[in-house]
Amino acid sequence: MWKLLYNIGLLLATPVIVGVLLAKPRCRPGFFQRMGWQDYSPNGGGSYQPLIWVHAVSLGEVVAAAPLVKALHKRHPEFRYIVTTVTETGREAVEQRLRGIAEHRYAPLDFSWAVAGMVRRLRPTLYVFVETELWPNLLWTLRKQDVPSVLVNGRLSSRSFHRQDVPVIRSFYRSVLQTLTLGLMQSDRDRDRLVALGADPTRVHVTGNIKFDQPLPDVRADESLRQSFGLDEHEQLILAGSTHPGEEEQLVSAYRQIVKTYPSAVLMLAPRHIERTDRVESTLRETGVVVQRRSRILEKQTGPRVIILDTRGELSRAYREAVAAFVGGTLVPVGGHNLLEPAVWGIPVMFGPHTDHCAEVATLLSQAGGGRRVAGVEDLVASLEEWLGQPEIRYQVGQAARQAVLDNQGALTRSLELIETCFRAAPSYSAPCVEPGTGPLMAKR
Image 1: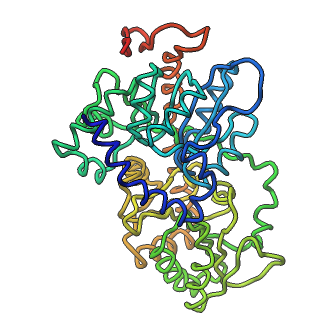
Image 2: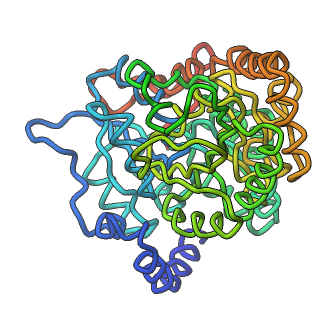
């Protein structure tokens, strides 16, 4: 019943879905792939090679999934790997981080014909998806084809859970979640929520957050990164990453107060959506600050200024050059982004009150003394003035952040061990999907 109702609703919404795709420039690339009208077959010819399909909706999910895909490829080079994304930034991250390891495709919209066509062409041995990106038709189709589906690094925000925890909606989600072979969740809270929505509790496990296992970016070729930002040796970089509208204004307001005491401080803003660069620049210039774009820095400029990081793929390395960091999506009700990117470098981390998407990490960093929650401009100024004025305290906070990351690694290994039990379709992997030492997790459905 739910499958019929869902597809009727999807059919009625088709004009709106297509209109949105065509209206948003960032959604137009890969349109025919998204609609199921373009061949999804892997590159290359020759005999069939068993394939693992990984879905990571956007940049953040690709960052989380990349070490997992690399580890799987290292252990199992006999498989071919395809990573699907929804966004352009996701595509770019796949091509940058997984070049030579995985191919990129745009994920099909959840129309029954689109997902059925992709599954038929790819014939995946295993489907792995990141952070609760549930697509009902896709999961139903995979179940019908007896392809194991594994949710990794799963999480359910409070907003999502409470919206779905209604009897009728819960009944629908139960029909979707019962297709899962394994649900590998970030925390006990996430596990309990997934089970409450209808997942089989014997298939849901707490493995931790694989973002703690992110390797440090390769910096051997980045020794000139600071110079390319136009920074002098004595200048102190404050980096605000993944910012949203409403946050840039507060950050600049705090910065204008700080430079009165610390004129060597330079603020760098990295908008979450790079296509907002023109608007952000215009807004900043109205405040009277000096503004530079990272892509247009031709020579060094001295004095207080704001640099807009308008290039892709540099943010995680840029945190290394900062003395303090702020992670966006937290001063406005977005839910927050990756707090671990600066922490892994030993950089003190600030974040706002809206951390629903990264609640456990925010709490962990706060309790460890490596992160600080700020409510607005006044708190930003107080924290930054303390860290800029007292380097020894700044160092202690940064080291606490780094240690918190090191102390919580291991999710990647735990996830790999469970995922490896699900290789069923490839010739060398005909055993049932089991948890080591506990018996079947996935009977013939």
